[in-house]
Length: 129
Image: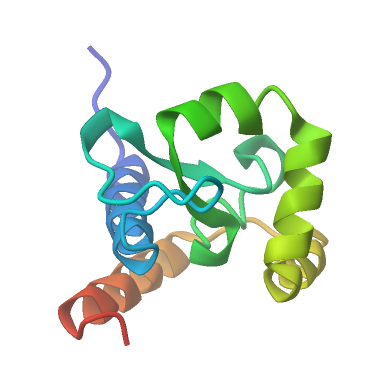
């Protein structure tokens, strides 16, 4: 088995923290259908701009939202145009921010991953800032 690099360990830790942050921020509520108290495999943290389109946005909380399993799998991924239009209408400022950030193509440096983890840990400890 391949040993994880320090960078990979940081990315894994950051992914776990960012999902925890977004679930808390969105109050475990599906942002599409409004179902509340989502738990376990029914509480998906979903990217707006896909990972493949922007590594810089992969760990940005404004690029993530909570969806229930049904809305994530059977709506968001099966109706991308409708889903994108919904997001733009529901979160216009976030959409504008993501459109600007998407243009930045510089790689995410290891020190930036560390800074993101520290910031998220601080916000989670302080009750979301």
